Image 1 (cartoon, rainbow, N blue to C red):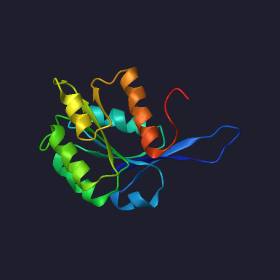
Image 2: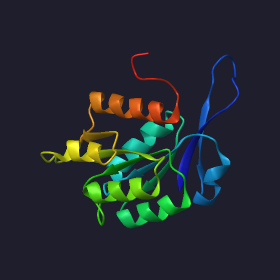
Image 3: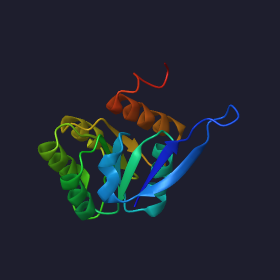
Length: 159
């Protein structure tokens, strides 16, 4: 299921927010940025999903590369955030596949165990960034910077 945040009309000078679930078949009915979060750890997926929903993004989550590849064929994502240790196709292999088949989709990698040269290799294949888990304040700011950059909401966090 996809959770989507919507702004309701202002009441008493305050804007209120509601959350609702949208099925994958209804995902293209909304104009918010569409982001995929692919991570084998449910806790990491939930954290990233909550963060992105709070910033007005539609989020589809996947727990393995099979589900990720299936959703890549169905949807036109603005950004994909995935764990390098994703079961199935992981590491840079999935990045190469994404860039080969969806040139307009940007990718941010997340890893718990950074390997020497992983970041430079990921950048060489077209990734925006490679962040280290657990995501601290700096990594979250970098992730939100990339989200804003990809969806055209502004140049960065310090503006």
